[in-house]
Image 1 (cartoon, rainbow, N blue to C red):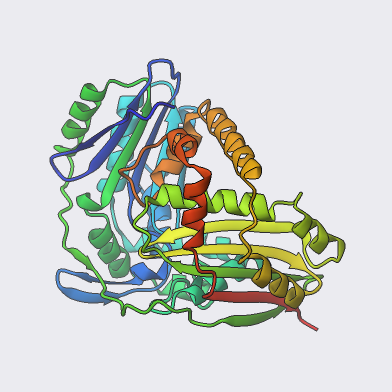
Image 2 (cartoon, rainbow, N blue to C red):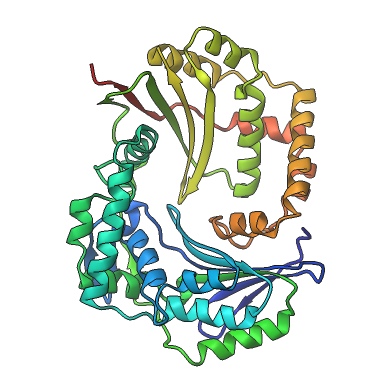
Length: 416
């Protein structure tokens, strides 16, 4: 994918990112709102009134807008057109998208209308609650979700990142407490036009697409911004350093999350790239460190790796099934601080990343779906130039700034 996408701001404040490629047969369209499952969003001010709501209303609204549009379930309508479509609530973004070939202009209008011109009724609220409660019941015993959610909550000391139920979707009880007024208030607060952005990629004309969008928005209600974020205490700690949860399982599951202050003054994309190379070279399944842990059944099936950027923090997580979680934590505490990466391994990791990036270009969904969930929406879609231009010396300099000191641990242990 080339990096020459076009960024526009419409008259109503909605941002638009358009990538035009006449060789694409399909078109990707996503409508996105900077509002997600993190508990950070559960306190806010709307019309200068302080609001505090039940958890997971972002996810609730995602279901509601899709299932209860003026046309009924809008995604059933899109699937009837043989589109690929979905709605996803991420920690900081809610995204509605479709991928199709025909009738794209009409479908763009339908997608925007679905999000921007909903109908809120008590009956619809009740029906959506019922569907989400069924979803909650099916996920309540998932040890991986419980561990990751518990660590997510404990890594933030100044706000409840996740519900105490250890489920980012809340509980049956909290879902049933969501009122029509709650849903409508959160919608009015977060679904303001300044908080939205559209991503369109495919065989589209930029000028005609912008003209189409302006025309669509002229026919539907405007959503001015009357929301301001809650002013959380500036507290860069963790809530708990260690927490053990007991469940009926065969082996322990442990997740270790490091928290780093993001004051590097470096593009997040480059930081993420450095972390990826660092973790790939040190902790992938073929390294001696992981092989030794596996042989001793300290790490069963390797080590899971992930990182996340939110506001002024970076969190880096390592997880594994283990018969000796304390031994895993002890080994990680020593290994994480050893910078022993060789230049040849660094260059090999870069080459593999470039190959993966080139492969992803063949499928427009993978590029744009990733772009839609990035926190810095003004940076380039393409990562190849960033990968190529990263030198080994710059990589070492950046990684030397990471202080792996502050962390939180969640261990899921056998109930016995």
